[in-house]
Length: 316
Length: 316
Image (cartoon, rainbow over all chains, first blue to last red; front, side):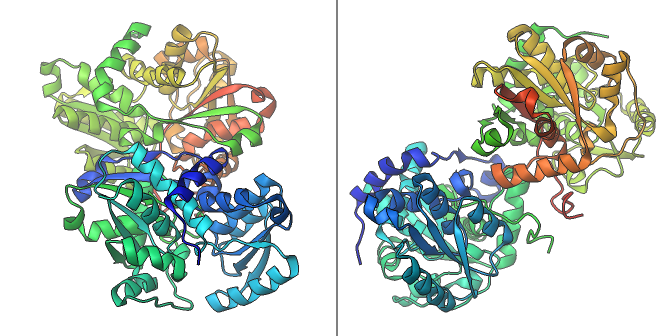
């Protein structure tokens, strides 16, 4: 296990700058009045490839030696990491192999192929995904870039919070969704060094609350195939992300699927931004824990905007 | 007929500044590559009350004497002007009476009431709307603020283009949707004075192409009750907007309803922004007239983002 350093985040920020957007921070009078907090939405849904994951993927791809890069990269992902690694590999001109659940949204599969990624499908469980991936990697010799349990990926995700604290002064808290813990780990790594007074909260779907239960238990609890509308957050913590989550997170809050969908729809209606269900989990938890956030300046990381517009959760 | 002057636009900009957003301009590599043009999207979907119409409405409301304001304001509108006038009247603390088609989206009716507007419903035709409105105005004595054929409203809408040319240098063209012609008239008024080399194009649904036919004929042609997915653009030109459209617009382009819906969905997918069908008409016309726009720097006015998320045109 290689634990990334704060210097790795600073290096990543320089390395990936040509390939990512410095995304805007939006505010909303409506949501400030609704929650009693001052919310600052860091909009990674406007990021290249539609999600923050392009930060970690670009850091991994552009950190490879020419010799390693020549064999390409490979990963398994429920969606946005696949898009992002395909995008980054495309920018470097190297192959990208992706193992993806056959049940992933068609919009995400099409987008991966649009960026030049080559997809091998697996069953929608963690065990099947890892099995099929081993076969693909053996056949290609490509460099494995794990979606989150990778020091290069975590250092890359940390750049999001570096930008956020440069864009917004005096934050009291930052909250982000937690699935495998890559974004939260990068947030912990960056903020515990650059802004150690900022409290870090993670937000998780009740129906995939393995991180919440792990955090309360003090050791990693992994579910094999949880079901939630927040389909980017089904994956379990791993040793490297557990290191950061257990060491730096103040608390993990959860929300039900109906609460997540309501927060998602409300954001589309009032902020006019397209965000994924996963990205609505922080707002859903803020709305049910108003006392915790009232009067605070809160950074809310909107992680992605890759949605299948034909199957919106409120029209299903 | 009172024709507003360029000075009226400059005055409006100062008058309404406390009540509106200076909206951002977004760019998209995807859409630039798709069209061959450099597109600059002026995002009035992020405006207060969700649409550019708050500019004209605020200018009218805050330009009233205290005596006139005391009786309130009144209007008829297919949606966004109603929202915007209700918002502006609420900020000044005066009543707002709105005549609205009973078929208008529920989301818009609820939002008007949310801003404190009082709705009287009419049939979905121009003739019924004008008849019911006369009754409401007679009963209340409120000041009529027409959705577009009003010198105060047109001067207010012109402030959008003042911002746009301040945000983006060296535009070759600006394109905006045309319904009654309020936004286009304000654009003509502002740009013919502040940036006379910028060509102004209007974009209209084929299924409500009265402005297109008027422009080609040389006189106003009005339809009573056209049907199009771009429900903000069903209303006809009037004398004041015809003055600007006939004098300053380079051309009017049209797109079919399926082309409009495709452009709308594509924008949601790739720019992650919620925009109305009406706002997608300019992009739809650019996509079918690529030669006209190729190599040009084009300002595209995204007029609003008030959408009923339960009845999206691609899920109906």
